[in-house]
Image (cartoon, rainbow, N blue to C red; front, side):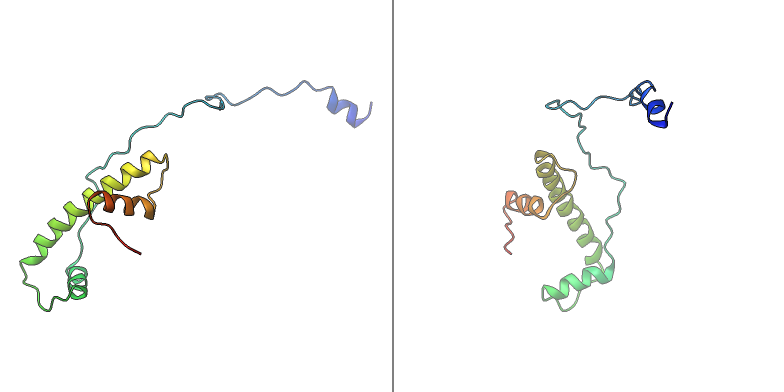
Length: 113
């Protein structure tokens, strides 16, 4: 008996995948993405100063930094929430530049390239 005949006499291997089978046209299970409060959004004093300089501000009061952090946090939370809505509608797992542009347009603040 040759080696080739020995190989052909073996029984076929069984499928070892025990999970859900991939069926064409079947709906995928998806859970909604939630914004959790465990992220840190705390821009530094120098970062706030750089943005203010770009906007033409010469001097900044010491009390302005905390207020700026609060306003920035609210603005970014709303923007990210809207961008995630566009991402989920597109059935993607990555937020794209187009999602952010659409979110800005939705908020009435269009960005031009």
